[in-house]
Image 1 (cartoon, helix red, strand yellow):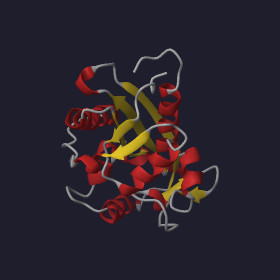
Image 2 (spheres, rainbow, N blue to C red):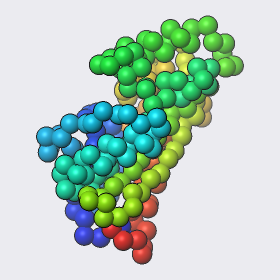
Image 3 (cartoon, rainbow, N blue to C red):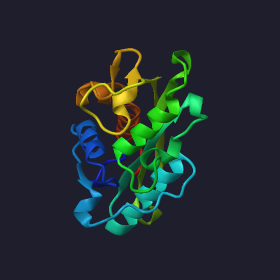
Image 4 (spheres, one colour):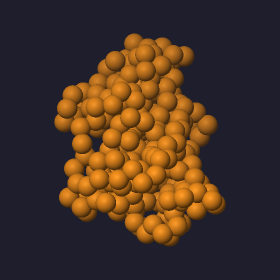
Length: 206
């Protein structure tokens, strides 16, 4: 079992909404998920060109700074009609320091003339666990949540692009779902549940 002997894992994120979601997913494991801010760790610049590269960059930085195993994810929305944008730039789509509202407004502007049958897209997530001093190979999982980009916001929950992302099965946006509903179907929920499963596999070394 990968988790044998590990009682704390650093979560390399400063996003409060993301931290709550991941803490919920790992609540059943006998391991404490500690935010990197508890160690005074800031996120490094995300210079990767893929979700996996950025997730590994953030996790390795947190692991090296804390001396503990570290988890990170990199995620974003990939819109078909925009040739995959915003992609890895989702959190800063409207520029460095942009707010969720800034990014969302830019996406809506760019999608305003896109017909209903071409508004597909998906949230992508790469979740990783790395170990300090490269003690073991990183564990990497990826997941996708497909849906449709709406023309206007719906719902008051979630964060980021959730208010305009419609889950076509439930017909709810990410912002209309409870945290439990969203974790059950979302890209991040799928990825971190898969990571949980890997961590609990028998015979794996930590």
